Image (tube, rainbow, N blue to C red; front, side, top):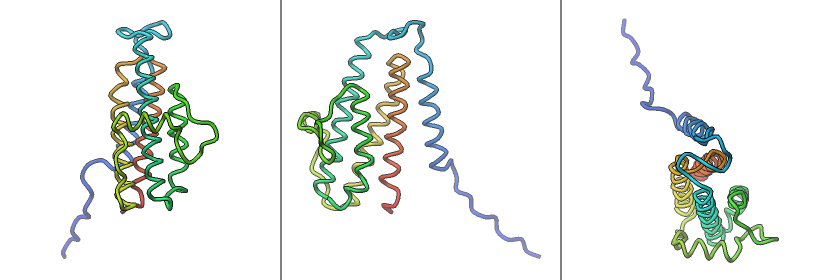
Length: 180
């Protein structure tokens, strides 16, 4: 009597498990500011928080610019990208950035200018698949930078960064889902 060969089980953790553990770690990392006073941390100051917020707002504005560039080049994905773009605008506003009033499909001129000045918006790939992959890579890279910044900022800002980093990782996943 022969035994059936063992079923192949993929090695390593699944994508969902990695995402869930990264999001949990981010939220736990932001639970304490290391000091007992609001707005202050063991090695940080309010100026550190202001700089971190300003950088996060600029980076979010740059991401809005990236979404706008992809939508302008590939209008057929506007419906798919609109909710993600709107969330990035909310992230920018949460960090103290401002969006132009009444604009739902394009970033404010200052947001697009900030993105261009930061060198974050380059020419959009000609194919929809490549444009979405590039956008997902940008979301992933920004999420990684925000996760790394968690240790440098006080508690409340760390929690906000963790939440927005997790959302960015989810955006990257959603942008690549169905692209295969």
